Length: 372
Image (cartoon, rainbow, N blue to C red; front, side, top):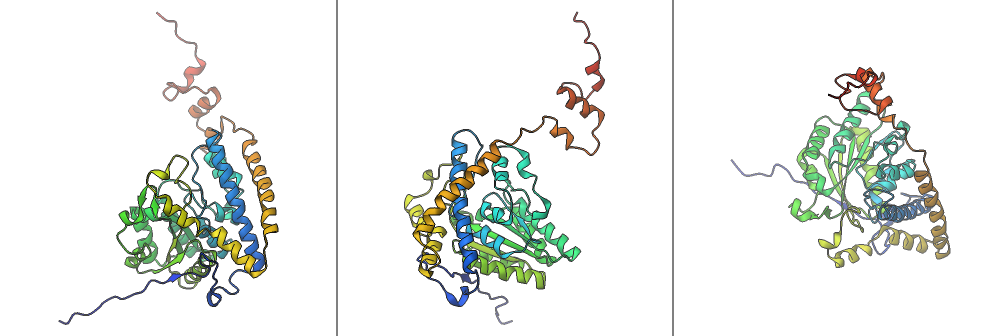
């Protein structure tokens, strides 16, 4: 039998606004109106200030571990901008920009990292799931949400975010296989920031691109410049259209970079060359957006300087709302566990005693036996 090719494909890389602020009008004209672009730029600046204050809160002992978003804002923000309010955003833990754009009160992220569970009590109308700390589990949640939307016929889709390291997890492969085989409207957004904590991408994936990992599941795959807001909006819009009209998932690899440490518990200087960080600082989405807007005549240095004071005031108010929230009631743990609280747990709640109460809750009302 002759040898013949059974499969050929190409993975495209999309770039519209490069690091030197060169703009491809053939792809980008009309994609983001000027007024929206200004609002998106200001939003990123607010998120940068939020990051800076969150870092200080952690260092001063007022908050737990925190993962900076700095440098990696475009994938989630571009997706949130491109999608509709009936679509689900299913994040991991570095998607502040997109979550805040959708409408999540920023103080809820601070509450989460302060260990206050009220930070996860998200308004269901926002269609945002709580941030996921375990690596990869949220992709399964997104698949289930997309399946539910397809079953109900409500026209919604799910977009989930994860890092390059998560593509080596079993949950990733299960979610990809399930969504492709069942024709589910999911957008898988891999934020390839070159590092799975301290492990470089090249050591945990030998393929030339992360994007091609989706080919094995028969889904459309594309790579984009993840620091290019226009490119992210473009590929997400295309993926959303495919999901709505064909019920087909898309795998997007957004090549980006985290400029800070993995979290405040990490010291990236131990495994990352400073030259690499400096290279990516030049590809910062804030820098290229500012240059582009100034060149287009819709922005100037005076307006840029004015933003600093505005976002400082805004983030100070956000921080105050988080820190000045009324402390939770100690009984909340019990009150929200069951629809009808069992008697033994009611006793624990009311007395805050746990020793042996599970065996005999009535002992708390009985006199103690005299010691021999």
